[in-house]
Length: 356
Image (cartoon, rainbow, N blue to C red; front, side, top):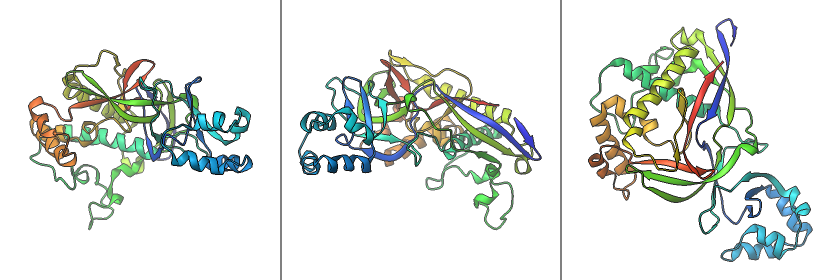
């Protein structure tokens, strides 16, 4: 830690204990990447360089035909139909990732939900994503310290975060104004780039309360388990005034992780092939972590009312999923999310946090 006046500067490190997916919102159609079955890799293309390749080799018309027809894949088109070699195609490749965990029994190609990448196409995690997950842990900590439960949650506004965090009174006429939030005292940089050797593709698998699994037709670009990701964390004590220090932030993260495990995860029979996250200070981050990790309805309302509220909220959001049945099961949501890595199922989003 480096301290200068009221600023405390730390290195915050996440070590993935499962699969980590922070989506960019981009979905890559299965006909627009190159799957190498022998190497079990997928190559993502630079669009401009790829079209230059087509033009230079007089392949534009052939490519239009490839795009229009049903079926087919880009590897077969480029190397077999067009007769190109690896040296010719290489300049059009941005990066490659492992795809050995992304194939189903039929080896059918899927559209890919892409990971967040910067302008240089390097994978990274926005600091805002990490700060949001830490905010949830700190809000949980504040709710728990009340030692009481509330009667309801406004469906539109959610838990009134301003009651807990908007304590600065910089805009007294508008309490909900973010300028009043003490969270302004926590600043987290975007991560350092993540090496593509630590990136991979995986298929999503849902696990029911009884441990039965169901593969979902969804392929995600993820960070592999065991990857270290580094950020800069700055605590501005002119704003925080000692309310949160590095140790107390870690304590809140650990407490929320323990609560999730005891209140939610232990209700599920774990799939036989699953690997459960290890470590104490586990932050749940990114896609696939589930509604429970983000809503805080259970600690805010109490378990019984939290279950009823969550079931009702999910029933309205996903009308065909029959979440009204969750109350009978005693838990909502009623599935855990996994992805496959090295023949085992790993949960999404669990990251061990260290602050130094």
